[in-house]
Length: 344
Figure 1 (tube, rainbow, N blue to C red):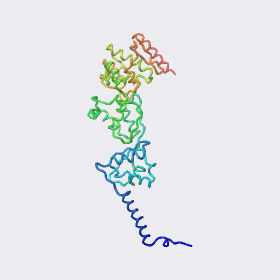
Figure 2 (cartoon, rainbow, N blue to C red; figure 1 turned 180 degrees about the horizontal axis):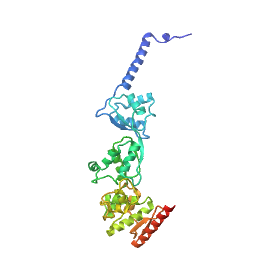
Figure 3 (cartoon, rainbow, N blue to C red; figure 1 turned 45 degrees about the vertical axis):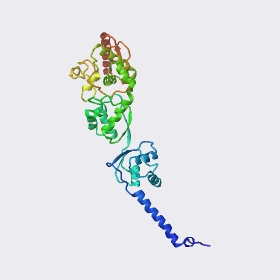
Figure 4 (cartoon, rainbow, N blue to C red; figure 1 turned 120 degrees about the vertical axis):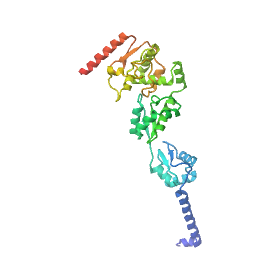
C-alpha cells in the first residue's frame, strides 16, 4: 500500500513542523549573523599562538568580551567546519563582527604572521633594524630611534642612553609589522632571562656593573668568533684594566668608522672619541654591539693568565704574549703571513 505524507501527518501538524524549522532558521541567523559588540576601543589586537587549542582561543575571546557566548561560538565553528582551519597569527578584530564574520577573519582575513628572527652574536642595533625591515616589515629607522630613546629605555628600568648590548642574541618569534617598542621589549627580555642573579653576583665580585660587563663582552665579541678563545682574550683585557693600561682594542676603532669594518689605518687610531681605546684608558662608555652568551660569560669568567697582548695568527685565531718584545715578534710573523697571502 502506497503512503503519502498527508496520510502520516495532518495539515496542522505540517504547519507546526514548518514553523519550527523556520523559527530555528531565524534563531540561527540571529545568533550566528547578528553583530557582537565589545566594550573599549576598536580594533582589538588578538594573537593566536602556534599549536594553541581551539578551546583556548574561545576562552580568551570570551574573557576579552569579544564574544558573548562560548557555546554559540563553538556551535558556529562546528557548523562552519572552522576548528582546524583557524590560523596562528596576529589579528585586529573590529567591533561588531558576528560569529561567522569572526571565523572568516581567523580563516582567511587579513592578519600578521609570526616569523623567526635570529639575532646573531655581535650584531648592532643598526644592523638589526635592517634585518627587521626585511624579515618582518618593521620601520628600521624607527626601530633604531626607539632603541636610543632614553624615555623609552627608562620604561624598561634602565638608565642607559642606548639598548646597544642589551638585545640578547638568539632566535625569537616576531609578528610582522610589530611596533619597534614591542620588539625591543622582547629582545631585552631575552637578556634579562639570561643574566640571572648568579651572574649579577659574579659582576659584583669583579667590581663591575652589568653595563661594564656588557661593554667588555662586546669588545671580546668583536675580537673573535671562536668561543674557546674568548676567556683568554678576556683575561688579557682584565690584566690591562687592572694595570691601568689602555685596551688598544681594534673593534672599538671599527665602531667609530662609518660604513662598516675595514682594515685600520694609523690615522684611525687618532680619532678623538671616548670609544677610542688607543687614546683613552679604561672601558669605552657603552657596548659597541650586542654580545652573545659566550662573550658575556668570558667577560665574567676570564682565564687567569699573564698575557697582556695578542695579535691575529692568520688562521682565525690569535697569538698571545706576556711581554711587548714577544708581541712585536708575533706582529712581524703576522705581517709576513699577510705579505705571503698577497703574492698568491
